[in-house]
Length: 312
Image (cartoon, rainbow, N blue to C red; front, side, top):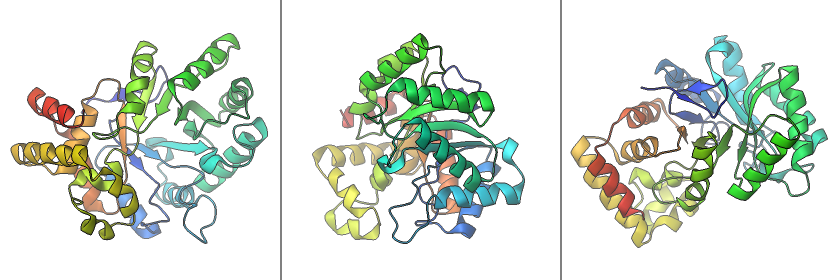
């Protein structure tokens, strides 16, 4: 499997990022360790989390996902073998992307992760109250101190990203090397708007909701199926004519390739121009193994075109 650079940075990863949003939610510490072991054991290194994962669970202390990953890093003593991605301004927290908030957040994340550096640190959400120069200057300080290697932006529009990148050039600050938008066979508009800029300026893209909250696994084909998932409410939005057309195409390609629908959906993402890697989470070792098969599956041009047309 070809490794892929993240923008113009020094980071190079395999084309799969393990999503840590389920750690502390549907995955406890013991199961999380097994999932992380399986992911790294399969030859992958990039693990994505955030200060806000999964703070939507009542009673959870802040940063449970980071805490579980940090305990695993300490137990396995393998920090130098993996790439840790985390985020600031999760849930659009007070202070947003102002310098003080970034300084406080990074120290808390480092403590929970039990590490002294973060490989890729994202602005989780844009913050209209913080100007780009203040935010990027705060990151510049972290990069110079060795606490952060590379910075990225999540959920930025092309206009917001371009404004931030121009500020970085004018002020001689590090730019965002990676963007993290929503992108899958169904949800394409956000990434399609960004793609020309990303390609022209060599900005990496790590895309989330790769399986559309589980819809692209093919398990949810009617309202009656939604009760099987904690994400049922989110999946319901995909049960329309477009979603059903995508499932039909996935079924066809899955049958031709002896793969699952989820594996085909991931293979389609990996084949898309401008995509560095998809993020996908897993709640079992078996799901990790399926994710690995998906990103290693090479689709024919006809299969890619069929899937692309179904979701257009």
